[in-house]
Length: 78
Image (cartoon, rainbow, N blue to C red; front, side, top):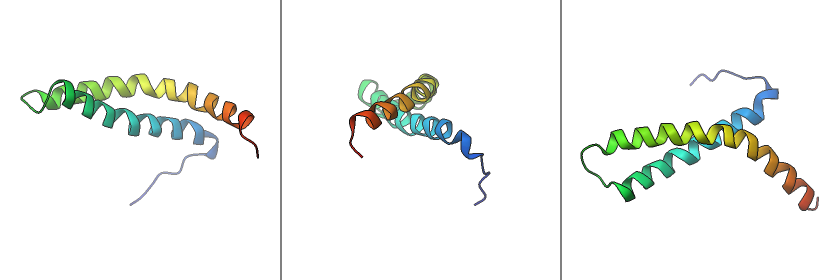
Protein backbone atom coordinates (compact mmCIF):
# COMPACT_ATOMS: atom_id res chain seq x y z
CA UNK A 1 0.00 0.00 0.00
CA UNK A 2 1.36 3.40 -0.96
CA UNK A 3 0.67 6.42 1.24
CA UNK A 4 1.20 10.03 0.26
CA UNK A 5 3.24 11.81 2.90
CA UNK A 6 1.93 15.15 4.10
CA UNK A 7 4.07 17.84 5.70
CA UNK A 8 4.13 17.46 9.50
CA UNK A 9 2.81 21.00 10.02
CA UNK A 10 -0.60 19.68 8.87
CA UNK A 11 -0.60 16.84 11.42
CA UNK A 12 -3.23 18.46 13.64
CA UNK A 13 -5.63 19.14 10.78
CA UNK A 14 -5.25 15.63 9.35
CA UNK A 15 -5.73 14.13 12.82
CA UNK A 16 -8.86 16.21 13.48
CA UNK A 17 -10.38 15.35 10.11
CA UNK A 18 -9.75 11.61 10.51
CA UNK A 19 -11.07 11.65 14.07
CA UNK A 20 -14.22 13.42 12.87
CA UNK A 21 -14.82 10.85 10.13
CA UNK A 22 -14.04 7.84 12.36
CA UNK A 23 -16.49 9.10 14.99
CA UNK A 24 -19.32 10.54 12.88
CA UNK A 25 -19.77 7.65 10.42
CA UNK A 26 -20.35 4.91 13.03
CA UNK A 27 -22.61 7.24 15.02
CA UNK A 28 -24.63 7.95 11.86
CA UNK A 29 -24.92 4.21 11.19
CA UNK A 30 -26.29 3.41 14.62
CA UNK A 31 -28.59 6.44 14.79
CA UNK A 32 -30.14 5.55 11.42
CA UNK A 33 -30.39 1.92 12.50
CA UNK A 34 -32.14 2.86 15.76
CA UNK A 35 -34.48 5.44 14.25
CA UNK A 36 -35.14 3.92 10.82
CA UNK A 37 -34.20 0.24 11.03
CA UNK A 38 -32.95 -2.08 8.30
CA UNK A 39 -35.53 -1.54 5.56
CA UNK A 40 -35.72 -0.12 2.06
CA UNK A 41 -33.94 3.21 1.97
CA UNK A 42 -31.61 2.45 4.89
CA UNK A 43 -28.44 2.83 2.83
CA UNK A 44 -29.50 6.18 1.38
CA UNK A 45 -30.50 7.48 4.82
CA UNK A 46 -27.17 6.27 6.24
CA UNK A 47 -25.16 7.91 3.46
CA UNK A 48 -27.01 11.22 3.85
CA UNK A 49 -26.57 11.12 7.61
CA UNK A 50 -22.88 10.23 7.30
CA UNK A 51 -22.18 13.02 4.84
CA UNK A 52 -24.02 15.61 6.91
CA UNK A 53 -22.44 14.41 10.16
CA UNK A 54 -18.97 14.47 8.64
CA UNK A 55 -19.52 17.92 7.11
CA UNK A 56 -20.50 19.23 10.53
CA UNK A 57 -17.92 17.35 12.59
CA UNK A 58 -14.80 18.19 10.56
CA UNK A 59 -14.90 21.96 11.22
CA UNK A 60 -15.95 21.38 14.83
CA UNK A 61 -13.13 18.88 15.38
CA UNK A 62 -10.60 21.31 13.92
CA UNK A 63 -11.76 23.94 16.39
CA UNK A 64 -12.39 21.92 19.52
CA UNK A 65 -9.69 19.21 19.49
CA UNK A 66 -6.85 21.79 19.74
CA UNK A 67 -8.86 23.69 22.37
CA UNK A 68 -9.39 20.51 24.39
CA UNK A 69 -5.69 19.72 24.09
CA UNK A 70 -4.77 23.17 25.50
CA UNK A 71 -7.21 22.76 28.40
CA UNK A 72 -5.92 19.28 29.22
CA UNK A 73 -2.31 20.53 29.13
CA UNK A 74 -3.20 23.22 31.67
CA UNK A 75 -5.17 20.91 33.97
CA UNK A 76 -3.04 17.74 33.95
CA UNK A 77 0.31 17.61 35.73
CA UNK A 78 3.42 16.62 33.82
